[in-house]
Amino acid sequence: RRWGTALAADGMQASGTVGSENARVGQVWYFALPVPGNISDEPIGITRAAVEHVPPGIEVLGYGADDMSDTDGLPLLATEGEPHTPDFARLRNYADRAVEVPAGETSDIFYAVRLKITSPPEGPVRRCRFEYTQDGRAYTQTMDCELHLTVAG
Image 1 (spheres, rainbow, N blue to C red):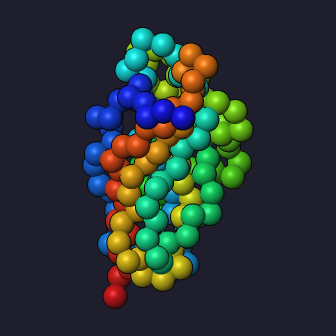
Image 2: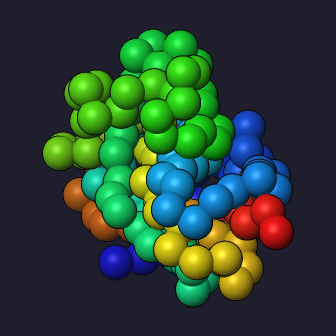
């Protein structure tokens, strides 16, 4: 596996920070990873996406890949069960096969991590890693992303 640079590192939330200061222990949150944008001249197939650093107090429940047309746009951060949160469990999960992103295009599929607050988080969730293939080779690319969930005292 090689380190790649086919994904845009300056996309919508690639270097931004999102969060909430009103989180509660027991809540489940969805955090959208940076939307894959292929800045290379060849198509890529994303095979996996994940957050690299998860602090004590937060548990990863799973990952999904969803189509933005199914979620009425990109839900950067959403709490499970809220009226405006998509019902991710009912949506088609595209993570079961490589998500193809043509050369020079941004994917309509985004990856999200489902997180549960188990105790007051001891820091942010950060760094998003994408694994993809291009021209028969496997690559890994990590980019900045950050989520702060603070349990209200």
